[in-house]
Length: 124
Image (cartoon, rainbow, N blue to C red; front, side):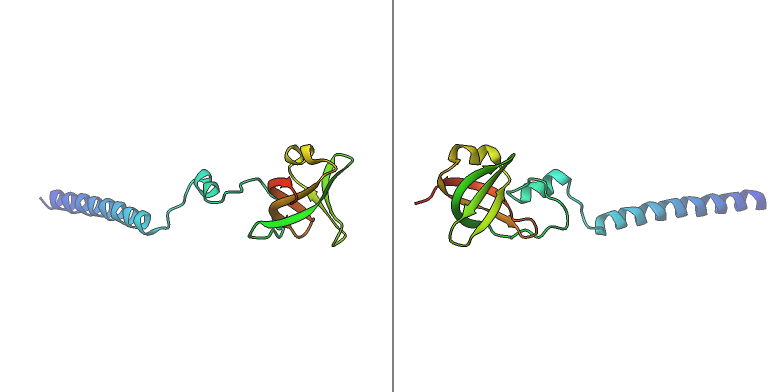
């Protein structure tokens, strides 16, 4: 009889420990911050083009004016007023405006003077 009671108590303790562990895991999962999938995080930001990590990019899109020129394989925006030259990341958008005065809306990478183009059109 003692052997039976010992087994019963041991089995009860094991069941209790398993149940408590399950509840602890459920509690930890419900309290832990929810992680969103990468796709959901990227959808939050309208501009999802990959950028090198560590670069400083303006938070808001800015307007730049100048003439689109091509040097080697890069499309550049040359601003005659500030004497600045910016590289444009989207050559397909810039190509129709080659040699023309344009207004570019985009975010500027302050480290490399690269404009992540949102839109480009003729300067008014």
